[in-house]
Length: 204
Ligand code: PCA
Image 1 (cartoon, rainbow, N blue to C red):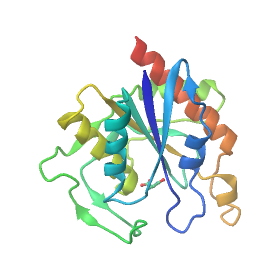
Image 2: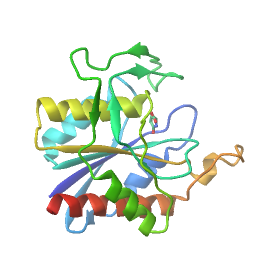
Image 3: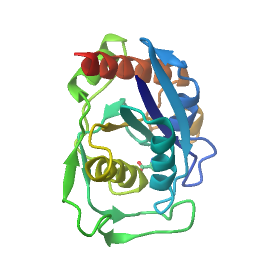
């Protein structure tokens, strides 16, 4: 079995994105499952094509995308992706959509196929804060989550897809002292715990 884990590159003036930093540091195997790691551009119109190429090349059973959610204090597996692009800031290509559908003929929303309750329980059991999130926002993270779900529906029906948002790293909040953060080693521990839960649910 193979899992493709993606992480976004820095955006919005940040020098670092905890998502790709965490994904890069995951082990190459978790519970006997191969972990394929992929950096994805924070660009509405490019991120999904990059992930699609990797799906075609690697044929993973699971795609788990990871992004930064500045301001959140916990690791948050996402329940739902919605069919809307709305940017409060431009993406890394300078594109800032306002209320456009992602797929004209697509459904309003998709639920993840991944076991988000088990993921939360596993992260908490590792001693870290975790909570299900019911909104991945309307920016590039929600966009990629929706597009991977659309791809699954249209072309890869056996795929399971999902998304996890993680907090800022401490170095990102040095000048934002009221914002929560999580150490990189904890992000790696938490994401590894979540992936372990995903693997054990797909084996059952
Ligand atoms: N977080 C943004 C996009 C890239 C990322 O890491 C988001 O939540 O949409």
